[in-house]
Image 1 (cartoon, rainbow, N blue to C red):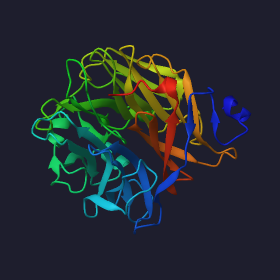
Image 2 (cartoon, helix red, strand yellow):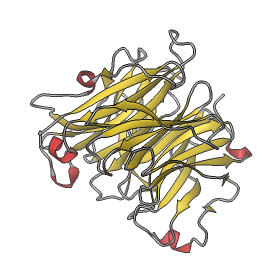
Image 3 (cartoon, rainbow, N blue to C red):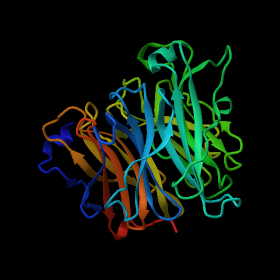
Image 4 (cartoon, rainbow, N blue to C red):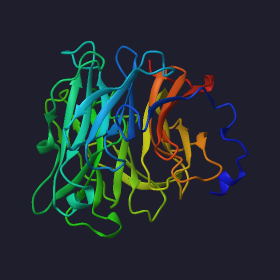
Length: 387
C-alpha cells in the first residue's frame, strides 16, 4: 500500500517508456440488456481477428448463484467499438459461469480454427456445494465460425472431476478468463484449462481448496486431469506456456494468510507440478488475476500478468510484464487506480494480444457496475511478439 500513497495521477507508468494507455471503452454496463449485473470477464481474439469479450450476465442480482447466462460482445476494430449483446449459454434458471474461451488453431479438421468456451453450471450456492449439498459440472460449447454460432453443450464432468473416498471433489471452477493452447514443444496443440476444486468437507481458511488443470491432446475429444497443486487454498487460477515444454499456473490464495499469488511450474505441459511457491512480487488482495504468453524473446516466454495489485483492496489494476519466463517482473503499468480508495474499484480482469503492438485489458470497474476494455500500446522494446 505504501507504493500507492505516492501516486499523484490516475494513470502512471511505473517504468517510463514501457507502454502507454489508449482510450477506454465500456463493453458491459450493469442494468443494461435485461441483466442486473455483468461480472467475470474473459476475452480472446478469434481466428478472423475479431475480439470476443465474454462475461456472466446475472439476471436478477449480483450474486454468484442463480439465473446467470454467459454473454458475449464482438469488436471488429480492435476494441474501439462493440456489438450488441449475444447470449452464448443459457442454463435456464441455473448459473452458467466462469467462461474460459480458447482458440484451437492446430486441428486439421478445422483449418479455419475452432473456438472452445468452457464453463461451469451448478445447482446450489458454492458454500452448500462445499458441504456436499449440490454439484458443479464442467461443459463446453464450440464455434467454427468465429463465435457467430455455437454448438450444443458437451458435458465433460466425468473426465474433469475425481470422486471417491480418497478424493471427494465438491466445489469446482474453471479459470475465470481465457484458457490456452500450447504452441511449441513436445505438447504442441494441447488445450489447457486452469481450474480449482474443494476436497472433502469444508476446512477453516478455505484449506479444502486446491488448484489443478485439465487438458486435451486430441482437440477436445477426451480430457485428462493434472495433479493438484500441493499448497492448500489454491483458488481461481490462470495458466501460460513457458519455454522448453513447461507451463506456469498462477493461482489466487484463498487462505489470505499471504497476500500474494501462488505460482506452480510444470515441466511436462501442465500434467505434474515440479515446484510451487508464493511470488512476493505479485501482491494480491485475494482476487482473480490473468496471465498470458504474448510472445518469445531469446527463447524465453514473454508474459503479461494483470491483477488488483495491492494487498488489501481491489482498487489498483496493474499489468506486469516478464521477459524471462516469469522469473522476474521488472516492468509494470498501472491501468486504473482509485485515489479515494473506494471499495472494489477494480477487480477481475483478462488479457488478450490484440496485435503485434497492442495488449488489451478487459476488467471490472466501479464496484462491478461496468466492464471496460483498455488497449495498451507497447513500445518498440516490448514487441517480441508471436509471429
